[in-house]
Length: 325
Ligand code: 13P
Ligand code: SF4
Image (tube, rainbow, N blue to C red; front, side):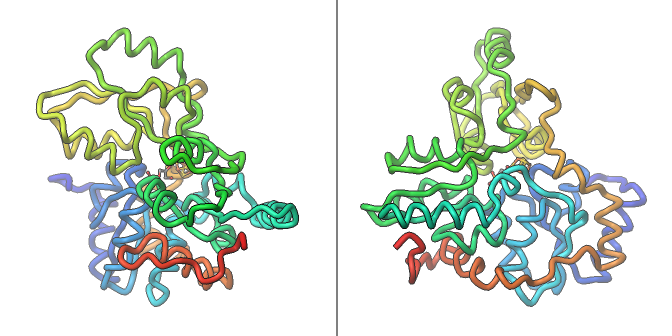
């Protein structure tokens, strides 16, 4: 929390008290938003923390699929999202009707499969899936929960799917989606940066393509990266291949190290434009207006079941009617 608050931040804290709100913020939000949050985290941590909130209002500083997840896991709460247009390129890559058609084709062809969707997907896609995973639990769910003998239709992130396939050795059919931020890291620039900082360790999010992960010393989800960095007792340089605002949390938690962002091919800042739609002013205004609010949609009923059995720990139960059967 900054020692002297700017006017908008002070207003947000006032409104928070007045509404009885809890602010959850993803690590990809600007530092000034993270500084005001009650809880910061990756998708998995925030989904789990959302179930523990006892205030009537959740202000979700992240993108739409994350706020929807918080609503599905807390139907009785008011969930506010500062900007309803804060989407995600992975969500856009997998329309539910296209997924349903693909599942139908696989069934007609006699394929025995289960559908595993990344949490970066619409509620309709979640409702069509057997399991929902995040970067934090994908390996565990695929390894421990999808019964042997089933192929896996993994949607929508082909890079995360490929990585999970490599680690678990499970047969996968990969959807052709990707994260517009993690896909554009430049191999040439990373090689150059490694040459310039020969002792630096490279850490990368598994939403990055294989050519970047192959150059990394450590690949792991957001929370895993923070933990990994914490295992280095001596000040160390890290080349970081993930969304740039992550550096705020890395510096806050482990300030003894130096963090250098890996450059992108088309955009050197590596900030997610969807996350960037949320500003302090919009956080304030959504609290003032109690709008935009995530309203219950019919598909939330089924998606909520899939989310709960996949992410809430314990219990993770088996699907009653695996979609691929
Ligand atoms: P995690 O928060 O699960 O690491 O996901 C990264 C991401 O790109 C979120 O949109
Ligand atoms: Fe989606 Fe990528 Fe932005 Fe995350 S960083 S919200 S995966 S576009």
